[in-house]
Length: 602
Image (tube, rainbow, N blue to C red; front, side, top):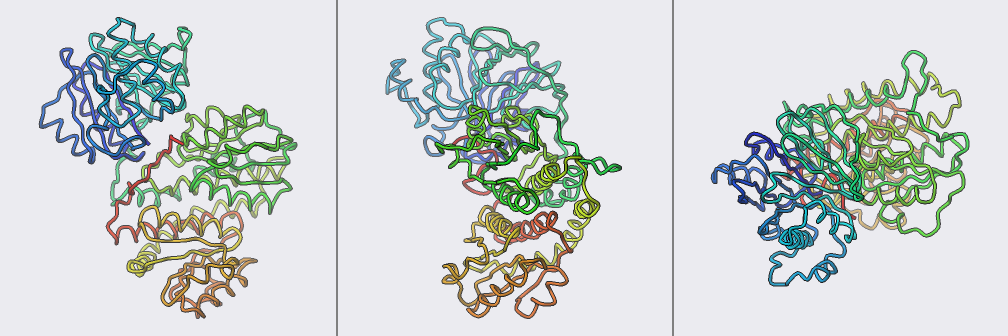
């Protein structure tokens, strides 16, 4: 969602601010802005289009500042417009804000903010007005922050510029914020990617941390005015992940990175010589677990659905999968011999995070599968299982999704064997997954032709059975996300219970049909579709091709797979179909409309 960057140093930092904002574009935004403090006066620039336009405004107006805060906004209160764009600037302060203030109307009345002073439709401006009013009473900025945020209901990360101070103040609760440290500057950002590449160390701020920075020093205190010591981490520049290189889009680059991300995740948990699985240490006793609640949103929810199939096929554990936004409102939960497993690319997904907090209040052990090791979800979990996919810039998740599957697979294998060993058959299957993905990537031109055929189709369907059903859902989601085409995914056995009514001449149905125990069943479903004029596009293997080719308009032959590797392998072509179709249609592949990468509001 929204992004925050603030830098105070001994140099003109507008280039670093712009580069940081561009690094946060993956979070999704509809407007952006910057404010700097120059000779004790605020100088600003705002745009309701892309950051490149903001950059042009900064250059045109020759904005030169050593202390500034900036923001990318994803609308929650008020439509995208200049008046609703952050920063909000008042007489003595400027504010940027991530999150939602649920009780902003109460705060307006509490501090007697006159209606004629409110210029925008946002909840954020109210904080700027309150802050400015209290500054006029000569109250210290840190005391003001404490006074305000103790009354706020909701999640937030704030950054404040205050005249006369030459400092940036920031505070967070439930919304991510990281501090960047260097010899000639200090910086804050809602994401480590937003920090300048010359950052030396980072500190991941915790809830109710208040930070005060100038270009030489920083101070972190809590609401009780005690100095807080936080661990410093070495900063590794992420610029390699932020450069498209030979690829046209980040999504394309991330799809082609999957042989590496899959291998890295696999070997992160497996000792190659002994074939033993090593999960990070925790006090979770896996032998006593009888119930698992998987909790996630969107693509991560599909990964959890696959994990449910795996666990029910290969273990005696009872498994439930929940959409986070629904689960958090449950009144009754099973506490006996239960763990909660939370899957999130960013580790900041607000609905998922709230569910984690809910389980922790009920003393249920938690595991997180995340792509950002120091994220909020990771830090609150009893056990963290990173996916090692590297930063994912494209809004539509690709490499993070398949790495989640690999990590969940390793978790299952750890459940299965008390000695933590993996048998040779499973080892070979998973070891060869990266090479199988490479073979599929070599078929990119074939997949591109499939996508081209779909350009003028009004509706598209995916079908699958067993482990392929969640991949059908994921394939449909990818198409919806970046092509804006109508697409639905179905369990193939459900066709006769309604969806067959939608099948007519030339409606394309993409069938995920590896030659497994479900093959003959899905072959019958394909014949039902064919009989009603539907156009079958089949993803299968060599054995499946022999039996299915006569019913198919086109067929893509994939490498042979086993139960563990199949969902990962079949994810690759559905990602590429969506990618190439989006390119043909001319949509914004990396930043599709109305969506955000890190969903940090409920």
